Amino acid sequence: PAIVVLLLTLLLGIQPVTTDLYLPGLPTLQRELGASMAATQLTLSALIICFGAAQLILGPLSDRFGRRPVLLAGLAVYTLASVAAALAPNVELLVAWRALQGAGMAAGVTCARSIVRDLFAPHEGARVMSKALSGLGLIAMASPVAGGIVVQWLNWHAALLVLALFGAATLALVAWRYEETVPRRDPRATQWAVLAANWRAVLAHPSFRAWTLLSGFAYGALFFLLAGTSFVYIGVLGTSKVGYGLIMLAQSSAYFAGTFWCRRLLARHGLRGAVARGALFTLAGGVAMAALALAGVHAVWAVMLPSILFCIGHGVHQPCGQAGAVGPFPEKAGTAASLSGFWMTAMAFMVGLFLGRSSGASLYPMTLGFAALALAQCVVAWTLVRWHGEPQAAPREAQASPA
Picture (cartoon, rainbow, N blue to C red):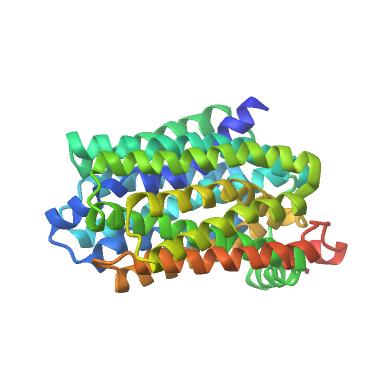
């Protein structure tokens, strides 16, 4: 069990490391490369959209060939792309290598979600996922602080080299300790007719739709904090790079606490009850951030404190949403994980485009957009998840691939 949790922590943690660690360097990167705001945001948005699109391919591939070969190939691509991104001489090449990074990152995250369903039933899977995401919380806590220090004392190139080291270490652990967990390889999982039938079966399941909508809105709101706060804190509110890293540390600490609270809620109230209670913090964070911004309170604490409230709720919603989405599909967990992940990253991509076109010397796009998605998340938690969130297995005929 300890190896499983460590493996899941690193595979899932590759996402916050890749997005968070270089955030303190975005303003410096923009200046040194002479890039526009939109082009700078694209270094994050391209990573996210390729991450989402690659999941649609890698999930079915892992159902067909197993998790291990997909992990080994994907992590190798990620590591090499990280080195190339660190050496990029212009923003165009940086965007291209970050896009390839996103594709490699998709292998780790998609297979991690699938491994949870390979080994555990949905309720137990949510508890194991929350343990792994506690580890992810530690990684997320360290990433912006480490990134701020590396950028402050070295440069943004060095921050991207740290990602290569993380990818190489994760690749080594997979090669050394991971044994295949897929319950049964499906040799037809990547055939177009079978793939389309599997997608229809997954998308038609009301439990999948409920949990996937919840996860998508949650990740979209989180992405406002990831992609928008460096420009708000550093560019608008005058925070130093290290100070920004410490603010992100506080948010990650709140998320870390939320994952521990999640396990207590699961034991007492189950999946749906845990999500309903976590949404109270999501609501408080969204409403507070919008209200303070509209009231003209443009201060660091007025953005940070609502973010902390949201991150506590996110520590509950993320493990429950990811385990709930794949819960009904033990025989095609990779396909379900890929569709759920694609929706999450599509939301993040749309947030990135919105921020790239609307952000500037104002904190309104970030604060009000964040609040809107936080409220949407609460609506789903208290309606669709409440009605359809018990992840019963899909009907037998939906589990079987057509001949």
